Length: 445
Image (cartoon, rainbow, N blue to C red; front, side):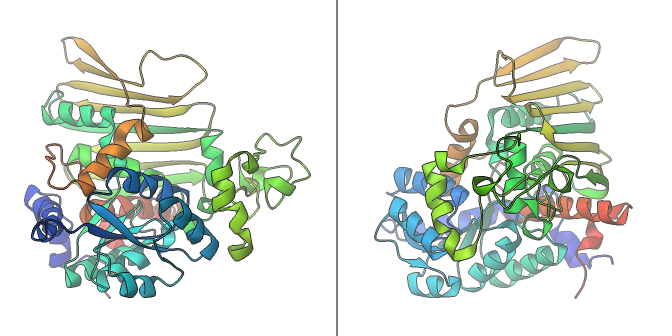
């Protein structure tokens, strides 16, 4: 069903729409705190697992304590919340009831780092209870969630940041600069290939991500970074997708299986056996908390119930006629990305090296080749901090306030919705065997 005009207007990517939905909203919470210069931002977190405490927990306490105060931690697993409390601050109260946390601690902003399928619920509830929100990607995993988030955001006027730290990597930023400078003229197409090695890739099939009901498949979870990058680089909206996906290596393809690695009788012959007890942090976060929820962080990658793909591809048509070919393979012996932009005046090739059994001279390499002219290579060096320095930069953007953003890296509601819709439309295309128009995913109630 076609969207009403008001919703089509909301989802446009024009500069004016981006300003209305992104930049203006970004400034509002900071200006409110500016009226009370001595007051710290009151922060609460729901979902206290590895990502939440590692990305938005301990670094925020360590680096922004002059600006931010954690006032509450919430998790459905009380033991995990208590462990988070032990590393973030003994005085931070813990909760298993989200509404109770908000009403008791009255935070200004809520960080949502739960299982993906529940992001939308907590984003909406936080807004309804008067809080701004910082949400890990993906913003949602189902079309109905996208529609309802838009409605609640409109009705409450609350601000939302979506944590697309992939925009902040050095190679991503340099690529954006070259595109904005018009180095390859009018953009015709983008070919984006993501390779996950057999260590990183397999880990998604050990965890809760292995089930579509939790993650919306890797097309919603992992690919949400890549889809957002594409939208940011291209500066237009995807309108139609045709996709394919298959589970080739994991799940039912294994010759043997067990519930989890620690008790597996096949550990001596399984190429994916993994000893979680060698990582004390994961033991504290998950193994010691299993009695509360039965979740095994070292789940078997060959569980027959796994229902997501390990190789997937999608073809997107954008409303400015740019064509995109995207692939994600989680069964490769090395890890990285190969991204090619073809335009009227030349080509940009991006190669991000992340893990491979050979030496590379740089962390990444960007080659700009101009038609009938020269070819120039830009070597890229990443910072030594998390995700090549991208995590630090996005935290600065969120918590230091009003920093210059010449490349438009800070992402909000609109970017989160569009990236999620690309994943949702892709798995819908795989399931139906046909093309899917993104605007048809958000229906009128």
